[in-house]
Image (cartoon, rainbow, N blue to C red; front, side, top):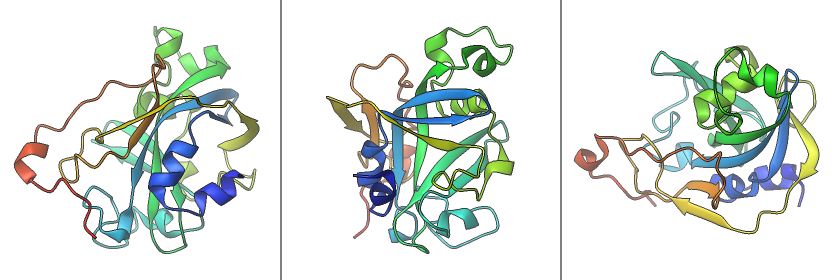
Length: 203
């Protein structure tokens, strides 16, 4: 199945299907090893688009494959790939990857082990040198800074578990990773998650 077909579907299907695929930007190539799905206007309280469309999240409502890039906690960028029908606002967060080419560019002066260069969404965007300027570009048309390569590794075992760092919908098992891969980020549950009590996706 092509990635375009994958991204036409719901985020919980697209997220695991992205594992093992290769993307590149600014001289750095990585293999995706961890993703996280968000259902947007379908009733997912953890999604940035849960309540309404805004100037910040507008890219989530565009064609499948569109990048939604946002600044998190005033500290770092995160990159998502939209999926599903136009207007639904579902997306997949790229959480981690293995840098396979352009290691020195991905390091960007940081004293990190190779396995840690894109281990987590903030490091991933920094390794690929992505920021808000990539927001609204599309992964599939080859014209944006992030492009999909015609390469995918078969993934034998995929694990799924609760999403990281969200206070609502925390226990929805929509975080997916290649089982045993050393580049997968550590799980960190939000300290507020237990207080909210909204741990199931609404029908």
